[in-house]
Image 1 (tube, rainbow, N blue to C red):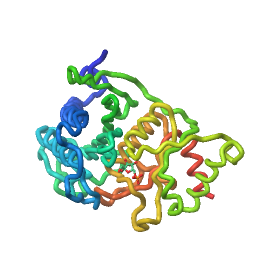
Image 2 (cartoon, helix red, strand yellow):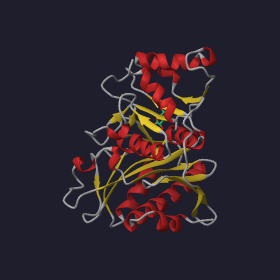
Image 3 (cartoon, helix red, strand yellow):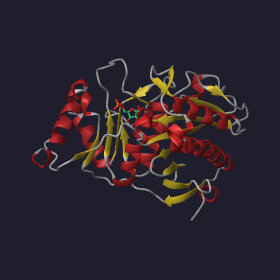
Image 4 (spheres, protein in one colour):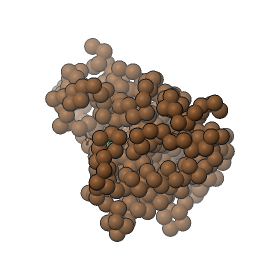
Length: 323
Ligand code: P6P
């Protein structure tokens, strides 16, 4: 079985990026350990504080964020970081080459009910003169990412990673603290019969999204001509892993509950990294109106509408939004 470091040394042509990914995994292995211990480590429950998103933080949100911050700040290769749990960007090392943006614990509302959560990360490069204390340094569109991935804290702990040359997955052996290559060149099937969306928001969607989902639910008698199944885990990282494994479509579209926001999910550290993984695996990632990785960011925590997964199904959603 091939260890992660051995794989990266052969697959990735930038040794500094290899160091950043390996260093990030040190933090994620510690997070995996704490997630596995749960109540025994006293890490469940609320942190009794609100983050910049206006969301109540879980203890593990704060713990995971601090572990990743600590790991990144210790690496000379990292110039700066941005986190869902940090209101502003954090300068790390002035001579660093990379910017790391991350959601330290996606799906954390599930942690207290023992459902899969994960860490999502995106890696950008910065020019030598870029100031890591300036938000503008991080506002690069998704196409500029040099790496993206997630660590899934589920029945097993998995790393799913792309550095722009396909998508690879690795399984953590907690007995030795090593990630081992599991799957190479992961591909998303072009078609699917499985959709993921939070149906309780249906009355708030745009008419185009209402029409598409209504046709999904008509099954084989409807215009889409097949019977669909539905999943909703409320952990994007778990939904995307299922789609990378067997296909599907994941949607968190615009809704009118907060009309000034284009969506619930965050572009820089959820939409963009997941879009890179999905597209590197042959899938498609759209806002329903444009490719997610072409969205020009205007703020670190900006939101985005998300429709991603099996290419043919995403194309169908786009067609519903063209008519
Ligand atoms: P809802 C988790 O909070 C998250 O950001 C994504 O991981 C997940 O897909 C979505 O929000 C769930 O949102 O509204 O169904 O709770």
